[in-house]
Figure 1 (cartoon, rainbow, N blue to C red):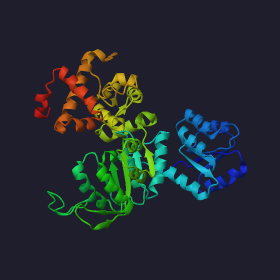
Figure 2 (cartoon, rainbow, N blue to C red):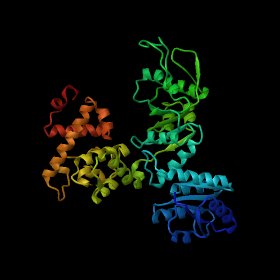
Figure 3 (cartoon, one colour):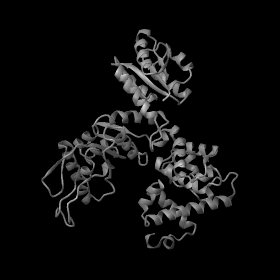
Figure 4 (cartoon, one colour):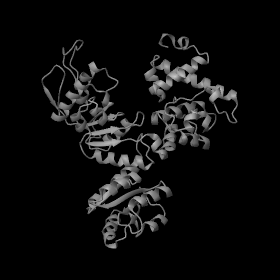
Length: 456
């Protein structure tokens, strides 16, 4: 990590002990006394900004710094009674905050969290301040054994964030078990989670450990927990309260040492109010809440994530994004979030000619890119010739692209045996958007019945 720190503190008596601690840790410290002077300084890896600035608030400073550059980490130093200012500073773009008076160990621990965040992380790209904030909170959560509730739209990467919490925790060498509660039939979910003994139900020819047992000592992720039935919710609550589990059909308790992470794309507080989710279970899970913002709210992440997927899926030859492709990616609203972006990059790698991916290779819906609020439109490209803005591209070229897109959708449908839901998930779009696209394919004369057999 770059050891350059900018300390923005008007009081020399307050600055001196901070400088001493930082220098002992090997940091190079630049000390300035006003916010405006600090904004004129070269961007530092970390800026520590006091709430006692004579010329602006720490929140205003963070806003000005964000306008100047997205580089570097800002940390607010606030008084004990300035909790609201700390929250406002975080909302404006500060990565974290310190409450006065603080011990040297608190400062060094915070810097260690920042340092850990700057190291390369598998499957996580975090360039925007919003993403860095989430990772800072995730790193704090990882140091405890408390339950974590991750919220966010579909496709934002909630399982990846859960894995990050596990990897940064003392349990990193122990199992990480993920369970998609929405993908398992209600009649089977209890046995899958808690296990069963021989004869517990029809077809139980032998005993089987559950996912909680498999994760013992480590972490279990309960993904899409909002889809869990009330009956299973009640049994899960008991497991969390007692820290022990009984297999279905057994009265023998198995002690658990486990970290529980739940994830949902629903507003569980609203589900509680509607009587769809147990309030007591909600508070058991919502000890340390983390929210992954949608991709459209962390613009600085779009191009780095795109390059991550290019590097992941490209073949031996080098590949880059052209300027028009970069512009198109940043203008698009990404209703399917990172899952949709991954699909778009995979498709573009197939469609490209040469070492560059162009905007045409991306095949993004132009209407959605131009109007970010048109969320009801399908996420896949609208290929109807009357709605395409062809620009300098030839109609024939667009037709080739369209046929390639149709072929890509057919291949995905075949892969999932004609299952629309699984195909839509793989494409990173809603089932409604997929229906629109299939209708467009039929209008173009494609016989889906013949192409897919009875599955269509």
